Length: 249
Image (cartoon, rainbow, N blue to C red; front, side, top):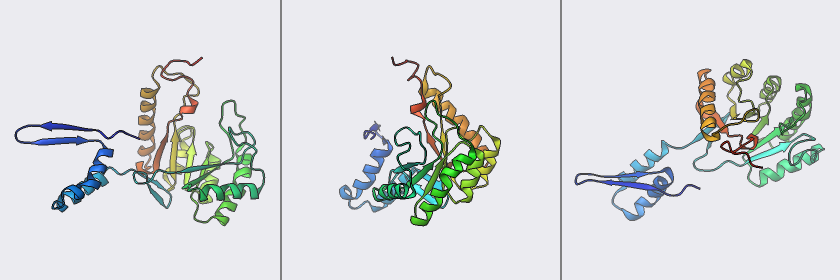
């Protein structure tokens, strides 16, 4: 959580206070308690802070991430994923786990049919679809209000799951490795989770390199007509080989 910070600049004619967002929201919430005769200022403060709300548009769903952090549930339909590969083998296993995540407050359920952990073995688009489509349909039938996502870097899989009505696509290749993806995303309303991956390279400064990557990635996505409110960023920290150029041994 960010610390509450402010800077005060004073002159004989003017007092200027610079606030970060956390402090600004605290000021907005507390203003009327201190200044009971300043209702107009309270309204103005509220309007100012609304301009900085962060939204993610994903299909028919618009998440206000400023007011409520998102809980993102992962449902791996894979035998070889990091934590739970092969743990959910039947439809009842999957649906019970999805139910538990939704009961725990998950806002999104992401169905995955291809792991991308280090040293992963790639499967064909058809194998990935054979793993995911039956469960996407079963989850939608059992939990019609659930917001569904799919983690895939394959165009054919993206195309098929969009036809099933998923709301979010998560791509470890950031949607720019295949020009067909950009048109597919632009022609849809799906939310994009675009990921930075440093798996194939080392950086001397990971943070600045990541910033540069996302500046270019966002420019590529938005230049194809994808609204920036549909795009969320995954830093892909777990894919980094080194931290700021210092290899950990």
